[in-house]
Image (cartoon, rainbow, N blue to C red):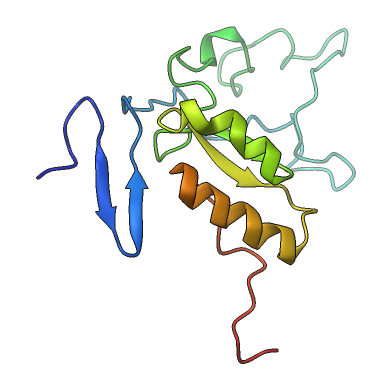
Length: 150
């Protein structure tokens, strides 16, 4: 097929042209499971979010056999794929139309995400301008009401 070359390309998509990333790396996660706080499954007051064990005699801090792993630097992501979205782009949060101009020359590496606190009116302007600049917007359909609601 046309759009599956290594160099990336522009694919015809519906009412315009969809941008594909310049290079699409395969994202490999060393671990997808969360590191849970020790004994969070036993006590209601101990929440699941990770906290470093600091007990003086604690067997988990001393890493006894048969206990869950601790988070450490070895679980870090590949530098090439760190912060990379599954669609092959890096995310750039856009608050207004002027922010989109920063992505003009980088539309094959970054995609835009409209910030959560942008109004529906400004959202429409941003999505429209992004189409002109050929910039991919990952949440272009958010907060858009159909004509029937109005």
